[in-house]
Length: 376
Figure: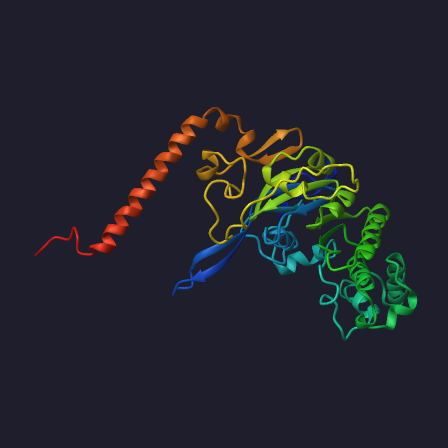
């Protein structure tokens, strides 16, 4: 571990609190008699990004694209199947549960559902103060005052200390969840759609609370959401995911002003503009998301892309820096592919012909099962 710490740049030198490099998470779907997986789901596939301390990265995409799995893998709630997770200069990818204990207070999670994520038989003070006792954040004599101070920071009244979760509204419960995460003095918080289950008016209060806490405490957020209006307001950079893969990554203003990937363009064209005189140039996506267990070859988005080319159907796009600090995985910005469009078309036609011949041969075998066998 000492050698790894020397090789890895410290957060002071690099400026990044979290670095994710080619992260993978695979779930087995079916297994054979020996217990080996025969089909798998690649929930997170070669995802890479970096976050500077005190900033927020938004992770967006359609339901089932792997956003929540990415957040939980970063937290080591799921063991990664490849890649690296570097937190504060330390490689935590392969650490066991015992060695991860010292990082648990530094990385926290705010769950999506404030109703099911709180234990119903514990009081608010017990919920917020449980981890404080376990990790010995403050002496026992200061425990109650410390918890009440955290409650006050999150907009919770002191008299709520001895009450139970069922006595509160959704917005107040989410404030309890935020207070629970802050109680152990974290540096990084993964927010898994923290406002999606709340009313719109309450959403604004929770988002403003998160921003205020970030400014006061220097927190870093990984903000998972499908609400692009919220993401635009709270984040500094945006990572767009589709079927476990990163489609695009750039600063928030850059992505909204100049989305490069056709998938990002379609997503962001659906964001409403509060101006009746502005005509929406909506990009409609055709078809449904393919099965993540059996994704398409080449670019996973090509089955729904209006700009699909022959190369997209069988060549997986490279993740390239199309502009300074603006990364995208699309053949439209790969100069090598764009120069050889004709060759790609010919190669695709050859692949299609081979597939047709293979299907025809299999069809003949089914019609004449004894055809081609040597007679005794």
